[in-house]
Image 1 (tube, rainbow over the protein chains, first blue to last red):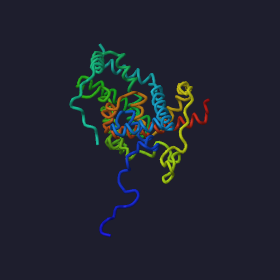
Image 2 (image 1 turned 30 degrees about the horizontal axis):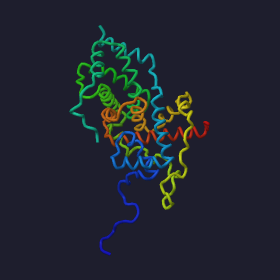
Image 3 (image 1 turned 60 degrees about the horizontal axis):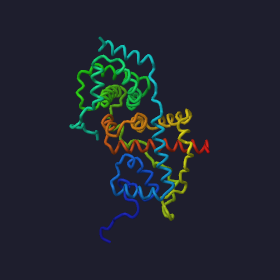
Image 4 (image 1 turned 120 degrees about the vertical axis):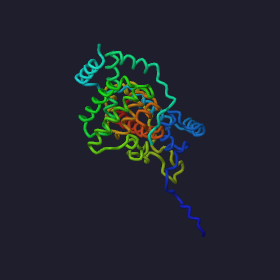
Length: 96
Length: 223
């Protein structure tokens, strides 16, 4: 028997990195992919998977659409009184 | 682990022009930068303070700090990173009074952030199945007119609401990256977080907002 105590099944510790060959891994790698942060080998497997998998292709497209749509959300407006007050403070500090 | 300042940082010509205008008393430059950064600064402040009203006070103090410090700005970080640092300091002081004396990097630690997978595990084939981990319920292609739907007031409001519902750490990162269009490096510098942590928070945020859109389009059933 000795000291061979390697546990079978899930070992404790950090979770395994997402697997670019499986769909549940691809959905976790999308942000790294879009940021160009995947290493070349993982990126190649990710892209090969995408080419063969309609579901993941759609998923990536939806993430891109989500990001684009977020860019069109207006940032909350500033209460006019707030801006006027700050500009007055600026004028007092800097103005001629 | 806070990101360390980049010793090789060079201010951009845009930043130099902005700071010169601000030092010169250019009111339009000042109100422009206030309009651009006020919303993100409120979200940053909300990481530290309990109420929207206190966050507004923190942001107000930040702008007054910017006015006082303008002549001392040395361009070792971008102008907006510098403004964020001032806001972080103000918010921390305020948070200390509210007993939230925590460094920004800890508030933005993904380990303390509600994580979870990007997509519900039930949508994939279970372990043991042939094709385990592949889609059981794949996403449906959004209709070609979804681009137009994404522009409607209703959908914009939905995206805004789902960003608003995110955990604060996810919300600030997605606001800066996707709503404001900052690049990853600048978000890391302004929030003093590592690229890896920044990406984890962004990924969780985007995944949740995508899921909200998917539910919306499925319910509305466009085309």
